[in-house]
Length: 409
Image 1 (tube, rainbow, N blue to C red):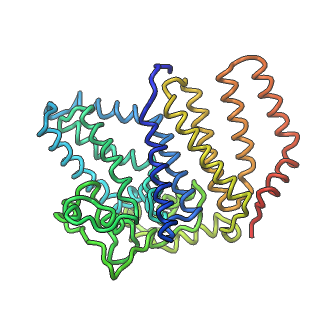
Image 2: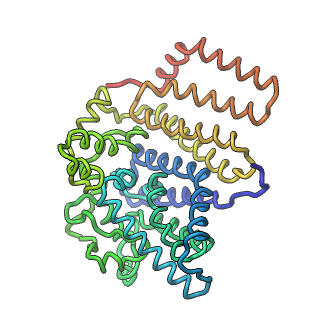
């Protein structure tokens, strides 16, 4: 619905992109391999969908927190210096336990695992967040209005919690001296993202490291133990849907095979250690035919890069001008962005099923134009191009795959 307001928070996207480019330039200058093409594209595309989902979910979350505050608040806390400080500490405390349980309970890990899949460690990894994490996190945030903090205070503090972690996802910053004792620094968070046995299940804090020190989950980065990033059992695919849902499939298969009610419940609410690591490879062999392909020709690499950047630009447009769009326009735009991201994941794997998705993307573009400039000529053009898609499907598909060199080895 039109409200006549620009959403200036959208400018966080180009700001973060500039910081990523600076980090990438620095890594080239220092001859460090902090960025790889496939990982960076995959990380950014996960973040694109999360930001897109925010367009639809932020108001729902705010309504939920306001409803809790208005109906169940134990106290009604007024904003002043001391209550802001208490709220900051309380929120950071809740984050610690949300984050820790996300590593210790399978159902929560299924939502959080996406953030840890990247084997790179740079600013793009900070974008690797899913809407499922936001849903689980909101259950912990509900304690804030329940205690009596008004929603406007809550959303302000949560914005800080959303921005700060971006800067801890980097290898370019070393030891920060006295700040290492108080804050979650890049060094502390590098440990958290590492799959080294010595570093597992450590450093859960978001802004303050004091909670890890209080609850016995702190370890400093060791010079003798360089960080190795990613999962202890890496996934072998870049397809967007598999990255998001593979662990739910693993839980489902483990649940099916478990004997007895107690063991079945353990697959859902137990620790990730309770899921056999061989199940992931077994599922990948069943679901994905052929061996994975990682070598891209120039045409394909350029197309993947262009599609990712253009999708990000479109996301920026919808976030900035979202208040000027109606619900149908936002829905069609959101579907286009989702299809684009899934398409890029398929292109990274050289999958041939991406072409039908490309046709759907084209149809969604035409549908958006028709909705925006609703008229008989627009409907006629939409119908004509849709028919041409069907008539010339095979020859266009052939040239598409030939130009991009899509072949499964």
